[in-house]
Length: 625
Image (cartoon, rainbow, N blue to C red; front, side, top):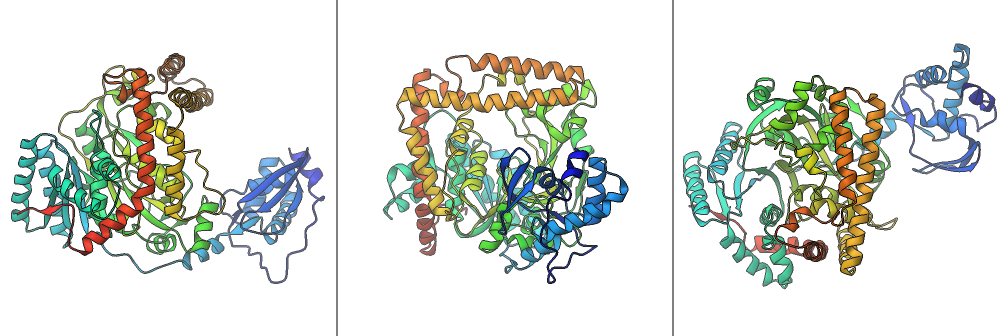
């Protein structure tokens, strides 16, 4: 490579650095976002995506530019390039001169240019969180504990937010016990608590129908249907409609207002393309997890408010003074800045305690957390039983998603967010993917603070759960397979229009014949599973199949996946097979996808109607008295 580069070094002659452009010795630079096209064996067409001249360059010189992935001085980039290419030290000045030419040509961008773009997009601070909303069902003791914890937090920090409980309990006695507990808490803590069960939701549904909204969509959004699977997404939609126009925090009923820091806590802000900035720490039991964590006196709502509703520039102003990392700030972010700033619409705290995951298969592919997972066979084995862990970012991070877990979210619900898929597990994952795909200028904020997820039912993973997972294909996984390929066109950045386009896309998928849809589902499932198998094999190669206990499990899981892939029903959602044939599950899946597609189209109007009803004093949840 070094010889090839030396042979190309003098072949590219750009204009000398213009007089009005200063190449600073102390400024840090990195590669711009580039469009590259091969135009020969050793040549590529290159153009900065942010605008600039198009050039044909030797491939070796293009590689020199693209290897400058992180911000650093040109001197350091030149030294690193010479070491990488095994060039003698006397070539450093020559390489540095070539990098200066690239900078003048816009192929390398200065850190302060991006910082300046962020600084130009700082808006007024958003209002405080107005509501802490809880979703619950058939767990009166849990919701009482959660509301008490967060109401005490608001008292301690002098907050004036109210509390809303959305209850999808299907047992009347559980609903009455919940209402009774909330009345007691409201009186004891002197706070406003609102409640909505089936009766309150039905009254609000009637109010929505009176505005002209289609009945089927109101029913689907708020009640799902009797499919025998979770309706948590419908409950979350009720919270969204009740709080239309507000900044809110959405909390699960088994979460407590206790905040712990990341073991690798850093001040500052990172803007990143990484889909999930969290790392994992694994514990054999709850006691060890709590004992090994650093709890701090911190208002979790104030943590959310550091980014929630703020522009990218506003977040940088609040959090980036200590350290601002823009190494992975890509074209999506810079395009948002050009359109007016971009905004963090969803914020996530880390999770300490029960992992809230159905299957532990992701631990096999745990990436940078793998060393902690594999430190001993005993620790590794306990991870696939205990469910107790910590997942948290090490530094405040803004990304475009789509990773989203809704145990403790901040939601900027002042304008429009997507609906949740009303039925099945992982409605929050579908929400995250929909936001990423349809809201081009909306972002997620992650914090190096975790919150305590503490269900009291002693959950563990069942024996053999990893292998059993191989034959499982969930409704949400298949839905995400349908969402990902949707094409919005090159110039559509309107959130509502993109929701409508995605809705039409899902409706057209669902309009296939049952045989065509089943074939589509199976093919997409094959593709996703094939990608997972390739990733597993790559991990095994890189790790040289060590340690052996992990490598053996990886191989066995791979075999189980391959076996599942050749069964006739692979791809059909497992949770819809309860008491149904494969054909019935297939038809029901199509029906659900069509309904969700239509809901995406209607949802903006439904949220508008909720805001208008609120202005008239009509709200979904009612104050407990």
